[in-house]
Length: 264
Ligand code: NAD
Image (tube, protein in one colour):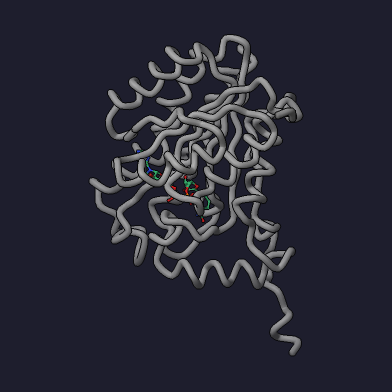
């Protein structure tokens, strides 16, 4: 297969099923010739991820729970043994207790604050460090964020705080790795109906609000996000690093919501 990712190999973390944002990205890069390795969290998801990987011609599928640093190390050891080097990394991982993705942010517990930060933010730093060690000729890293980092979105609560820290991590990692020609970017995706998305209280209402009020009058699909990720992971974006790139059908630029309904 030929394409702009021909000859490139990378790791995609965060496929849970065929609705996952990571799956949209995997399809886009594989269609352009990339070889992809996948991780999954726990055997229940492994059963879903292996056949998906096979659809893209990959049998490189390894377990990884980012709360367990030994499994992160084992993932990168597997990459080093099988491929030696990689060209790109996708981190599409987030978690918070859904009991705290509703109500007041002020009610966040210390335990869930720490766990959310480790899984949704710090894991990217730990993983980026290990990925950079496998990128002697440069590379591209990507993580996923949401506009709840910048603005108050009902119920997003501690995830918004974690995403703000994740975006700041992207900037610091950009400075760390830039001299080695390694780029680090993040896509700020609009709401997508995924397992993680469903954990946020009133997710359906937030999704519908975005559909009605985004300039494009829809929400972004995993294929839309995959297309933008392809650009950021390929050499087409070789001068772009440290960026928060919005793929949200334009919603984040709006102030007054759409007046369509008021005009009726
Ligand atoms: P998803 O549920 O399909 O993917 C989330 C992934 O995180 C799953 O594969 C899950 O296994 C993984 N994960 C959670 N805890 C983990 C752990 N301890 N170790 C390893 N993996 C773990 O949902 P998604 O919406 O595709 O989420 C992907 C990323 O996109 C997340 O960072 C999410 O915050 C972000 N995002 C989602 C939306 C949305 O509306 N769905 C919007 C913007 C950003």
